[in-house]
Amino acid sequence: MAGVKDAGHLYTRSAPADQLRREATALRTARTATVLGAIAAATLLTISNASADINFEIDHAGTTPFDPNVPSAMVCAPVNPVGKGCFREEGDWFEIVDQNEDGHSTLVAWRSVYPESQATVRQGTIWNTGGFQAYRWQNKNFTEGYILEFRVCAGEYGNLHVIDSSCSPWKATKS
Image 1 (cartoon, rainbow, N blue to C red):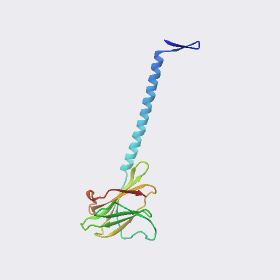
Image 2 (cartoon, helix red, strand yellow):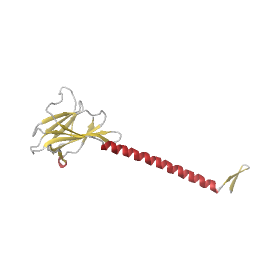
Image 3 (spheres, rainbow, N blue to C red):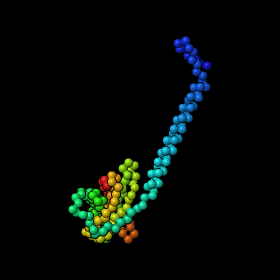
Image 4 (cartoon, rainbow, N blue to C red):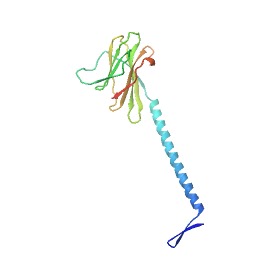
């Protein structure tokens, strides 16, 4: 037994007690790591299950436009030769124009993203089947404060095939 003399008192420390303290510390550390790992796994499982349950919305844009008397800025996807896709935050309106006489429909692919986790909570496509130079509009109802990402593409409406190589880059804005 080892001892330390301090102010007339003899303090003893046994080797087995030191070993027990180290083992107890190691056990607490292992338990903490296990709990944190379980929490992380549960969080990832929740996020992936939420993403897997998202319904894909498919809309056919109509000929009724938004109210032009209500002022609101339009945010448009990057320039794309197949067409133009824009979003109007006031009222959550999309405007889609087919600008290419190629026989394909023009569409907007969109997704609504929760800002805190960056998880997609809604997604879909809006199709303009009116043909070359046809303007079409679609009203949606997005949750305020979320991120809206959208892009314009060409596609085949008959089988809802989006021609990925025709898509513009994604444009992000608030909803």
